[in-house]
Image (cartoon, rainbow, N blue to C red):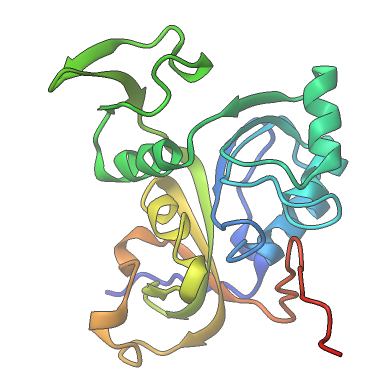
Length: 235
C-alpha cells in the first residue's frame, strides 16, 4: 500500500513543528529556499528554533523573516553577510551562532543522512572552528573531528516532484537541498510542479522519495536575487 505523502499546502506540511525544535532549511543564498514553508513558520509563531542553513536570508525575506520575529535561538550556518538584523542580534548576544566552513557544513548534513556519526577534515584546523575538537594527522596533515548534523524536520525546495516524493532540483538549487533532505527525521518538500508517479525520468531524480514524508506544490515564488550587479549600458 502506497504511503500518502501529498499535502494541500504549507500549513498542512508544517503541522507538528514546535518551539525548540531543530530545523534544516535548504537553499544557497536565496536560490532554492523553501519560501512558502518559512512564511508558514512565521505565521505559526514557533520560537527558540535551531536553524541549520547555509545562509540566513536577507532582512525581509527567507530566514530573515524568522529573525525579525525573534523566532530563531541558534543559527548553524556558513555565510550570513547579507542580513543586517542577523548581524545586530549576533553582536548583541541575542542570537547564538555557529559558523562552519561551507564544505564542512555540507558534509556534516550529508553524514547525518548517511548514518555516519563523524568524520575528519583539514578545514578549520588552527582557527576558532577547530578549538576544543579532536585532532589527528593523516598523511602528515592535521585534521579536526566534525560531527554529523541531523534535524527534527528538514525543509527543502525542489523544481519538480512526484506524488511519491521523488525530487528534481534545478541548477544552483541542487546545493544543500539533497543533503538536508536525507538528514531530517521528517522531511518536507515544497515544489514548483507536482506530477503523478512515473512522469519523472528515474535517471534525473536527485532525491529519492524514500527520504520525503510530506510534499506540496507552492505557487507565486519570488526567486529574488541577493545582490544584483549589472554593467552600465554601453553608449
